[in-house]
Image (cartoon, rainbow, N blue to C red):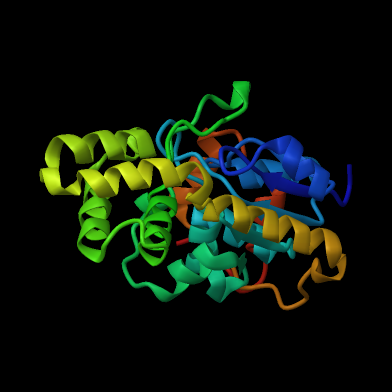
Length: 263
């Protein structure tokens, strides 16, 4: 399966919808070790990171993405964990796409929690079980522009959403919490918002994911193995992690040849 595109995808976008846009190997949300396994198994033409796990397993490490880049494998990111890692690793060549990526890249101390959602187990599809805070915030801003809520009402609702744990965030929960905690004069706005949400809610994560997959499908020439791969230095802690996971091998050790060394 030499030269496949590998996409890590979960709750952001249904796999069938993604596969209709871009022909690729679709894998469950990435976790620690997933990128190393993908490089070894598929020798991929490129890796696309959309979704990642972080609560039930250690999150995909920056170091393994850096390692893939150092081996010349292009790595793209968008929408969720992919946008976050792309913003953090742009300096070593990870390529980000979309609104959420740009927001993370331009916003100091932006919270990982903005894109976090609960999801079903990967074995049954990794479907979303909650709503991302960034989607809720953008939807509330759209509601403000549409005259559904006022600025103070938007701020109060956004505060409620931010104060809710990510596994419990949903529009139904937000409306219920607002009705039980906000002053009675908010009632009219909540009624308007409840009626508007089915057609007015935004899903920026989905839009960014579809945008990246569509771009790669339309412009395959963007997938280029870099000649100027970033320097890579293996750390002792990551070496131990790899060894414990059964992922240590000659391909990882070989990248230390030349100027790199273990620290």
